[in-house]
Each structure stands twice: as structure tokens, then as C-alpha cells.
Length: 275
Ligand SMILES: NC(=O)c1ccc[n+]([C@@H]2O[C@H](COP(=O)([O-])OP(=O)(O)OC[C@H]3O[C@@H](n4cnc5c(N)ncnc54)[C@H](O)[C@@H]3O)[C@@H](O)[C@H]2O)c1
Image (cartoon, rainbow, N blue to C red; front, side, top):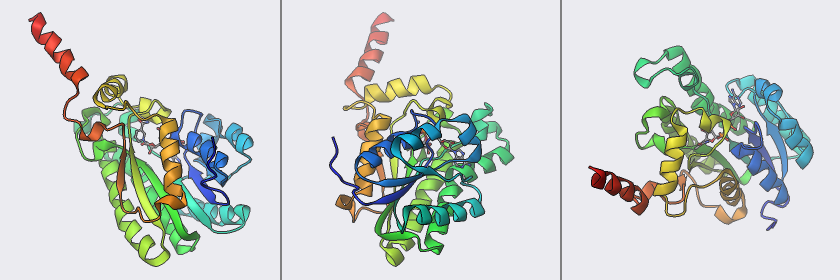
């Protein structure tokens, strides 16, 4: 069902790798809601993923950009405004990667070159993206910028590794840049803190199967899926959320405010009785 929430709006969506990607589902949904989109991803992801299929499906152009490279981002902003024929109404930053996680390096044994790389890709890229948009005055008034985060920014999830620190930094950038974007351009900036989701990035985290199942049992509404996240993100791009800014918004079926659930408790009660 379409509500035409994004009718006439133009946006840039980063991070659609394959059909499981949160960005992929958001692009499809934004298109259904009437938006015109430019898709972007790192040049290497163009070769590995299936972004071209998505582009054909929603009639979008792709502009490759490595989100750690300022010149790529400046080119992206120029090309996107040209292709879309005007200023940008919404941007989704859906990018995350830790080399330490990928290579199985423990949090207490970091390779700091890898730490720096993961920080640049997962957090600083958000600043670089916003700086390119800001300096080129490419955002429309009352535009909306969203990045995706995870609750490991606030609480310990041991296997989330240095991504926890990257997410904390990302959320801080949203507030700091969001202040200036709000003051100067009336643009809002928020992060969505999403449930564990079975995607390429998600499944790269050690112990993922365990904590996705645990989160599901802890959340009164169950985990939010990638599709649910797409739906929520659309509301933040719509004109119905104009005064929401500088927020980290939990989208997790209630997980973040639950101490313990009946299901999780029962698992331990049974264990007790087996003693
Ligand atoms: N999957 C989860 O459990 C989960 C939970 C909360 C938040 N998130 C966040 O959601 C976002 C999207 O991830 P996803 O789960 O859809 O996984 P995904 O693997 O589908 O998407 C990650 C994307 O980042 C892109 N990327 C990596 N390096 C890049 C670079 N240098 N320049 C441009 N793009 C680059 C990849 O090509 C890929 O498209 C990430 O920020 C992730 O941390 C994921």
C-alpha cells in the first residue's frame, strides 16, 4: 500500500548491496511512496552486489562513491542534483564495516590501522557526506538525513567489537552536524537504532545467530525486520516528522527498554530445575 508520503521528493540512498540490505528495502519503499532516487555504493560493492537489479526495478541511476573519499562524495552530490534536477530532500546513510570484525580480531587485540579504517567507513563517512551536502547547499529546506545505528553504542555487546565505538561516534556526529544543519538549513538529522537484522553486515558479527534470537525473545513486539526499518525510515523522510532532529531513535520492537522478558526468564528457570 502506498500513502504517497514522498511524492515529488528526491533522495540519495547509500548502502544497497543485495536484497537483504536495509538500504535496498528503503529504496524500494521510497520509490513506492513516490520518490525519485539516486543510488550509491562503493565501487567494489558494484561488482560484488546486485545494485544494478535494484536500479532497474525502481528506475534509479547509480553514482558510485567510496564514502570515505571526499572527492567521490562531492562528485556524488553534483551528479545527484543534476540527475534529480534540483535539491535533495532526503539522504540515507546505511554503511557499516569493521576490518577487525571481518578478520576476527578481538576487541582487546585491535589492529589500529583496521580500527581507523572501520571508523572512517562506519562513522566519519557520515560527517563527510553531510559536509559535502552542506558546503554545496544541496539539501532542500525541511530535508531529512538518516543514518543507521545499533544499541551497542550505549550498551555492551561483547562481539560487536569496535563497531560499538563507531556507532557511538556516528550518533554523536548526527547530533553535532544536525545542530548546524538545523540552524542554517532547516534540515533534520537522526539515527535509527535498529534491531539485529540478517544482512551481509549483520551476519558478519560473531555470535549473530545467538543475539538476534535473544533480542527477538526480549522484545515485546519481536525484532524489527529490514522491511520494518524501511517503513520507519520513510516516515522520517516524510513531511510528518519535520521537528524530529538530533535524535537516536530506537527501532527495536521495544528491546531497549526491557529488563528481562518472560521467555528469557523461563529459559533460566528451567535450567535451575534441572540442577
Ligand atoms: N544488520 C544489522 O543487524 C544491523 C543492526 C543495526 C544497524 N545496522 C546498520 O545498518 C546499516 C546497513 O547495513 P545492512 O545491515 O543493511 O548491511 P549491508 O551489508 O547490506 O550494507 C552495508 C553497506 O555498506 C556499504 N559500504 C561498505 N563500505 C563502504 C564504503 N567505503 N563506501 C560506501 N559504502 C560502503 C556496503 O557496500 C553495503 O552496501 C549499517 O550502518 C549497519 O551497521 C545493521
